[in-house]
Amino acid sequence: MSSFASYIIGFLILIVGLAFAAYLLNIPSTWIGVGVIVLLGIGVLSATSRTKMRDPAAGTGASDTTVGERRPPTGPTA
Image (cartoon, rainbow, N blue to C red; front, top):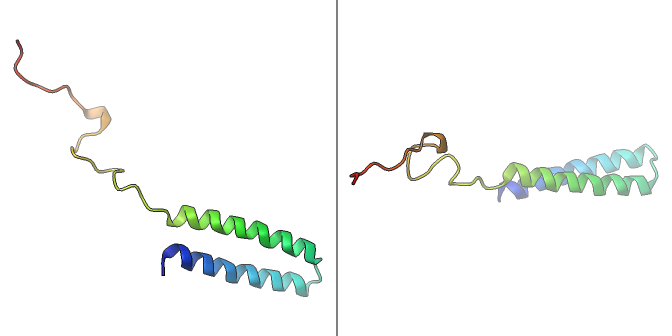
């Protein structure tokens, strides 16, 4: 199971628990529905940002120099 799927499953369990608690506190079902939709959106956004694939080119490259350290090529001058 991917990290994204396990994060979403955990977040869904949290949402169900909070919705059930809100139901037991006699909060109107309309507001429970609104809360569930908002929390689902937050869950997807945070799962995507926490489990996104890192750019393999970030921090590594063909040379060990950074942009600030690059020098013009040296070669024979005419």
